[in-house]
Length: 228
Image (tube, rainbow, N blue to C red; front, side):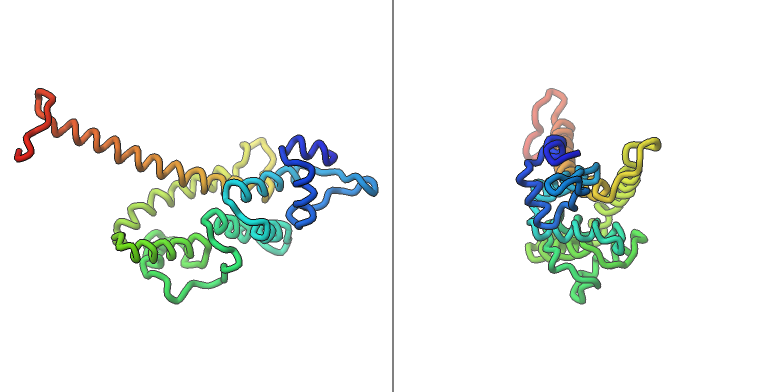
């Protein structure tokens, strides 16, 4: 497809597409003439990923360039791009991502990984969890290991199912998704489902509060005396 069709199908203006090409985010198309290039489905996937990272994850152009460089490097595994995308979705600075585990990491992080049987490996989410635990401790928000595990166990099951769905793509008969599409689905799922979990937790609190209030009422429907 030519540039105009790529713009129409992606919903991205031709000016933005040219900008992404200049910034190294979008690979060049196959040159047809001196002024015309042919673009393929992988360009559509890349544009969708760029738009999500910019608009949903609020990532800078420089940060998205780091992600795209990882995707375009045949020597780097897909997990490297996924880690960068996760870091951006979590609001972490990708320039500060370094291999290894911080020496001052909260011990609850390693204990949690051991309890769940997860690899004791460095990752962006691990850094984010350590930072969150430090912040909660500074704000005097209690989170004993048992409570942390209570949240982590169901999330681990959800994450495993998410990965199966992402890798499956459109179904058994559909072609395998591109690396860009896999990263895109991971980021969208991470951001959207995080919000969904917050809403569902709030709905559960509200619903149980209503149930508890109904159960505490007397047979005639009135609230019990305060000293009852």
